[in-house]
Image (cartoon, rainbow, N blue to C red; front, side, top):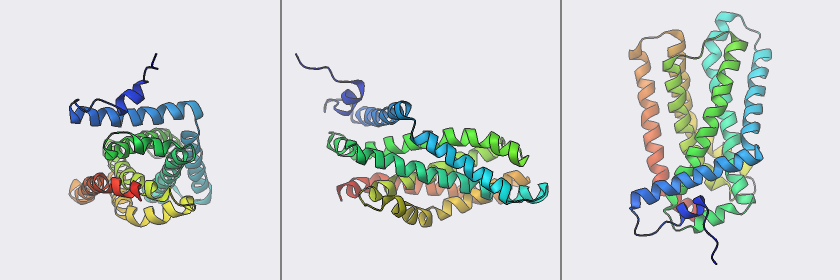
Length: 244
């Protein structure tokens, strides 16, 4: 008697006669569910990201002995440095765990469009980053006496996180094949992430300072354009990157 397939295996090995769009979405959901289930069992990725982010905030809090007015001016910079460092750590661990456990080869052998693997990994990484940010924001608000729960700022955080994860997931898939992946990923990622980080810092500062929307919109437009461009680029080149 044949062993029944698990939900994840069933989604990744869907019938070719199934609607292609639904098959693609099922494959993406299966990869996301696999990452979430693995993290619930191990608690390695999320805990390391969270501890690292909190340590960065504490270090800045004690290192920058500034008055309240000056602290307000550096809030957006410190916040995005924390998100960038924690996100890079998560991106590295996400792909490295797949490679070390031999799961990456299994994913690449599944009969689905490989871009589904990219989107599944990207959505999983984005969920982990959002969880870290939801915990970091209240801690930062208490330590720095700053209200960060502003609708405009939250929109900037979402847009900036999407762009950072979109390019980071693509580059982590490239760097995971190297023995120096822990060093290679930041070297590749930070230069490409400069536009999204600068735009996110500027837009965040605008909302925190109460600037006019006319001054903030150019940075928001840059974030939206960055997200769309790099998501499209990743969709087109991911197959070639993992082949190499």
